[in-house]
Length: 97
Image (cartoon, rainbow, N blue to C red; front, side, top):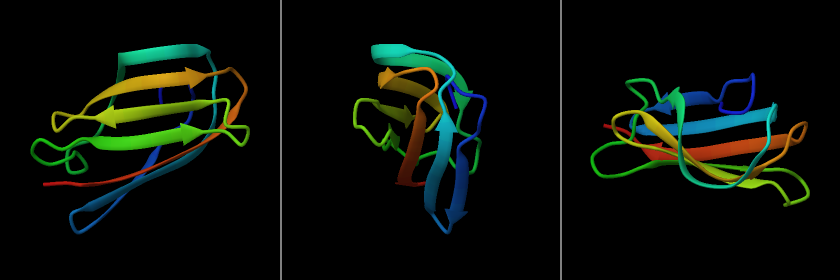
């Protein structure tokens, strides 16, 4: 997970992939838009065709909110705001090939 030392757990059942994590952010990011991150979605879990993998992260205050989306090539992009030390829940679901 970008801006954290933890991983997002991906589970595939048939063609459905779910993503979940409870992490602590290790850096700040403020209203970033379509910022490429170095993490990738592994083959076998990537979204199919023209679709996107969408994961939402938020804390219990609602002040921290961001989206990660992934492409069929496995690239990931970050949008939103996060603060160092905040605990964030992340979830997502998509169809894979």
